[in-house]
Length: 183
Image (cartoon, rainbow, N blue to C red; front, side, top):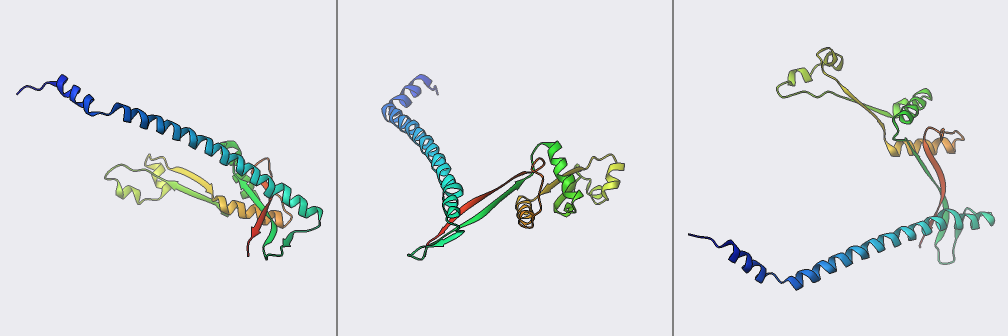
């Protein structure tokens, strides 16, 4: 039995609708461009929204001596504070942040995970204490972290209590945020 690869190749080309394929590829590229334009427009709209929410409306209400306002249709406008506090990814700054938390009696916010990796058949060694692991030649890995929402809550509580968190160690900000509740 002989197979004619050239003939099979020709049959595949004849069966393929190249014009249809080309049109679909052009359509796909056009959709990709439209999505990119739409995402850029969405980013711009979010910037405008944030500016009006955190700067323009709070400024207008503040000039009138108001923190909130109830409209005739029953909707309410109120200004809330939005707090953010994160630990930098830079290892030196991260170490400084953990030291600051510990030095200020907040070390219990830090989750401390120690892990030891074992090979197959070493289940009995896995049951030993971590200090024994080091004496057996294993290198335990330690990972420390603070949950982002916990840190954000701590920052909000400290600011509201008149306490500070060092912005040279943590990434912090407080901004106004407008909330409009419809009836």
